[in-house]
Length: 536
Image (cartoon, rainbow, N blue to C red; front, side, top):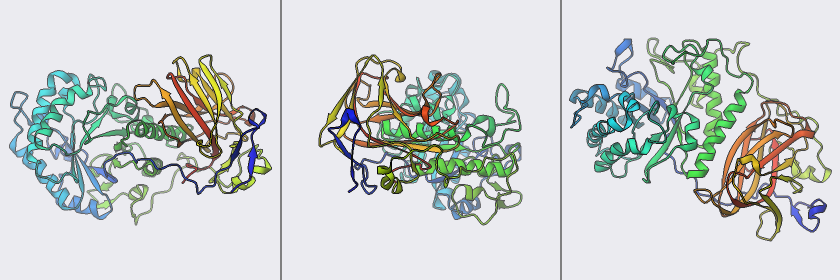
């Protein structure tokens, strides 16, 4: 056991023992997710009006053998149905087209790959969701019937790609209800996939609904920063981002960390972990070295969370494989963590910034001598005093008290925060002082014990907005993440990369409680630099 350390004067009667790293958080149920793994889209093939348009490569069995051999586990097969079916009941699909889709699915499954069969570019439904929903559902009735006897653990249906325009999260369930009902007639338990509005970007997860169906799963697409991934893309309306944007500019790392936090928050709130249905960068104006760097950064950020990643695409656009040369593009497979016998081209001076030097101790770190042994066993560097609960709380609707009970993990002392009136998240909160400068480009992680005594939030769980912040107006910060807190004690973590320097005297980790009428108990908090997790 570590030496027990007295709290500051306000809590001098309570003692908190510092936790050994072997003490892990209580067991929690892992979020439900599809075993997508490393995945690739068969892009610009069957989602065109006709396969092979614009000189694109037609899919054959050798493609799937090659994809499986290199280590991919899943393919996502985008298919266009509106141009191959009647818009009048019974919405008959062209037999030759349905046969071709079946042939491609069969080839992929025969190669040992999972298949996500995705309805793609069903353009009328995005213009008139309610009016077109019966047609869309009629098509899915035929598709589902065709594949009813196929194994459910390797073939999954994605009802519609990237809702946008008039097709939003607000009408998502209603619009897709005919399709879901049609699928369930013949495939009562096959996994079905829902992506959110506004092109299924990561921010759509904040309000993405799922039907009351245990086999419905969420997805999102990731092309951030859009100014990098879609620079010069002629199809972007009303105007494509200008050419010349490099990945690794100021704020890119912080944005990536923040987007990972959004996915983590969705999983904690819903119990289902989304997979990434698309990601990539446009090859026409992004050098290969930059594409490799971007793919690697996205994979390394999201994969540790367990997020399956479907890159766009195999060949034709945003390619990983050069069909004309008959070879994989150098470095692209390795960027996804797959075996790769090629070497990525060198990065130009305009490429991503080098990784932060994690061997260098944070600036202005003033570590009390009694915490040195604990610091030695932590990943990264300790940058707060976890033995102290001298946090500054604020907000007229916030009441704070001390809870000293043996049941509180790691020391028997917690702070109780009671919010009596809901408002903005920042209208009530607590500030945890740091003992080191925050440095731009460096990763910071906070872990803390918490439970919700009561909450009037819609899901009955507590809501804590966590961020790192400068304690000066306008209070700039980074890492904003909403943590969902259940009724039992649990250890939560939030990690982010700093997008600016903050001197030690102004550096805070902040918990904001004001978004709901709720009573929360917050126990020991630990903040480290240069580690993405405290417990792993």
